[in-house]
Length: 269
Image (tube, rainbow, N blue to C red; front, side, top):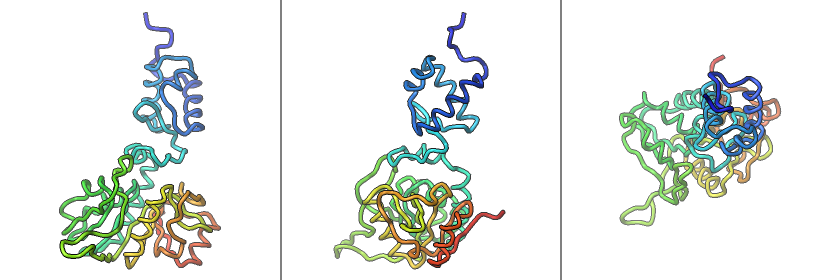
């Protein structure tokens, strides 16, 4: 005989709705929290979460789940964040890759949207790429680049990235000044008054310096980042030439971008 709380073939509609709503409201939950709240076993909750993840209702994580509507916390693992807003990031990556010309030198920062852009560069050739993304350095197709450089610094495990100066040491001098044609910078928030921001102070400084070292700057941000402000400002709106995104910004932000001379790139309708 099966146990009283054994999960049936399909998750009951009532518990399914309540479970999904609770995860969405909470942002991030554990299996233990859900088992206690819904008074079922941990194994039942795991099966429920697996089903809801398959249906695209939430994102299953190790030990719990994350709601799709919730902005991921700064220390959320990269693999989890990669599964949020996936289609939007792929659209942005494809558009941003269209700004890159063969033979150019580019800077790409760490983050899931920037990683989608790196993956979209597979048709390019003879690039010089500088990045602080450890994951991006391993996923960049070797046929696309002539030279690949990773900035040194402290390693941030959750982001699989380095945080440090945007420069490289030399054998016979303290550092080598670098200059790139294009910077592709994924940000955490875009607002009319603050501009571009992120949650980490050191990261914000690094991203700002990346922008300074490029002739052209493209900001990468999906629409969930609009009209938000995070802890550390990266730059004002006018520091970028392009905003590459998945849907049209709200009216006030679009007006501010136009006034700042930022061209908004959107996927084809």
